[in-house]
Image (cartoon, rainbow, N blue to C red; front, side, top):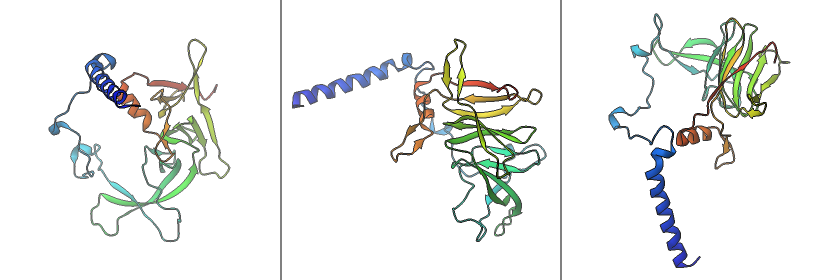
Amino acid sequence: MDRNQRKLASIACILLAVAIQRLSPFLLPHGPAVEISPLHRPVISEVDPSNESLRLKGGRLTKIYERMEDGRREHGPLLFHPETILFDNGGIMYIMNEGAKLVSLTDFRPKDDDDDEHILTARTTEVAHLGPGRPLGGKFDSRNCLYYASVMLGLARLCDPASPTSKVELLASRVRLDDGSWSPILYADDVDIGPRTGHVYFSDASDVPSDLDGTGNLDFHYSSKIEGARGKRSGRLLRYRPETG
């Protein structure tokens, strides 16, 4: 490419950028981005247990840290990047971490080196591996089966997680549309279960598949970045009926 061609290419890029800027109110269904003043921007900080607005009625906000016990685990912490807190029918607390592991939290104790009553430590145990992908939302049903939404997989189920013979079941990776065609579930996000019907309701947050990041690993935030840029209403609420599959 000679000098004149490079100059023309630069001018074309500038004109294209100006055109996109001018046309953005018409390209995005919800209008262009709005600048937020520094006084109204969200601030990321440590949770303040004394903040009354964060307390439930009659309860209190408590920080829970993982207790690393000597000789118990060789592969590092389990309590990292949890998306959802779960409770089974016996009241045991679980989280699903970024590594797609179902982790139980038991034996809560006050933190030894801290007098703050709002800080506890817990024993963490890997109960099961939930397969490839990134589990996000989940819920136990009346039979103690865990239904969970996983990016890449879709809707999956694990019954009797503590049993060494339990297996992950893939329940839905696509959904049939009104015209009879099939649509993939690309970003299963959250789960709830009807208390009377037992039907499982779950969301599919995006129709954009996850992509690889610069290190070759799947970037599960890629879809949300694209959705934020294009402003398309692609989310869906889906239903799964356990009695019929």
